[in-house]
Amino acid sequence: MAASTQAPAPALSAEQAKVVLAEVIKAFGAPENVQRMDEARENACNDMGKMLQFLLPVATQIQQDVIKAYGFSSDGEGVLKFARLIKSYESQDPEIASMSGKLKAMFLPPMTLPPHGAGIGGVAAS
Image 1: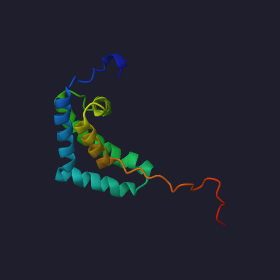
Image 2: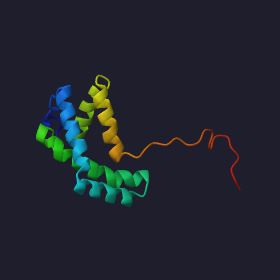
Image 3: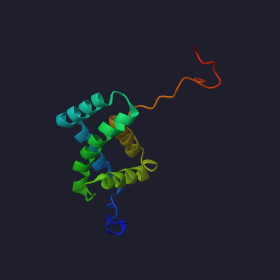
Image 4: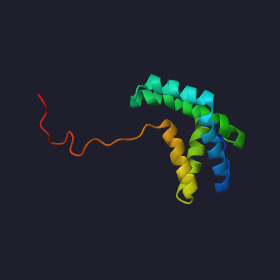
């Protein structure tokens, strides 16, 4: 698809963005989507590469199903445009920032830092 044929992201106000975000979060809570996400998580086995392979496509599809009703394209590009729009409101609206964090937590694994000093200048165990 040529870049010139891509439609711009729909212009949503912060209030409209909250409504769409709330609907996306609600969609993740629907029983059939909970089941789809659980199956994808099980297939991923806490492996980051497998998370991208199994979990992200399911999460993207769930979001697409909601946001297409608000003028976003029903493909990965539409989800990216929606994510950029939400990100643009996060610094202006604490409620959007909170909802965005909640949404991300539904499909991104928590990032854990290695213990302080692990693997840095230490002696390898033999």
